[in-house]
Length: 110
Length: 120
Image 1 (cartoon, rainbow over the protein chains, first blue to last red):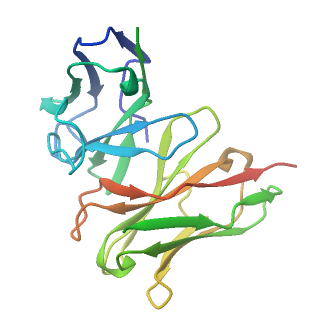
Image 2 (tube, rainbow over the protein chains, first blue to last red):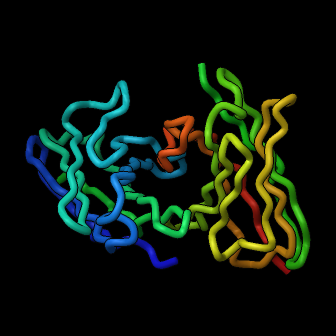
């Protein structure tokens, strides 16, 4: 089960916006709206930031937004803050009743 | 308040078995899809298994035939029985609760994780 493709790292300055991409296939990202994004600090459990492509759980800042076009999903963080520096993972349901994660993206706030 | 607390990790030799537990509070495990996700040291997240409300189970190819997910509703606890362990199973294992009762395959609550180390 090959992983979804994410950039290894992205960076931005405070106040800027960044976008993290997550590319899959028509059997996962492109075929279903079960795409999620997780934030993970080192040594901590992941935290759900976006589910079902673009829904934000209660308590998650509206600076985080999700979208999808074809086989690629995206996470956008606007008004970048120092506390956003973390690893981000996308996930998607896959057609053979499985879940696949992206390899993760390390976000650096300059 | 929803909480998930894993236990049962430890050091084990290749070929050995281990059972992980995930004690839930603040909700009933029988009312949600529940999953196990693991993370090898310094690596990314890897989905392991999920169980539906009806008890239907699904597994990653890497653990199929070796791992079994199940739950004890009376104890409100999720389990992962791991047999024929390999070095590549070394990871922190998280249990996680699905957002939906019907299974959206996205997880809104996670435990703190339990470390499994397989070494000879």
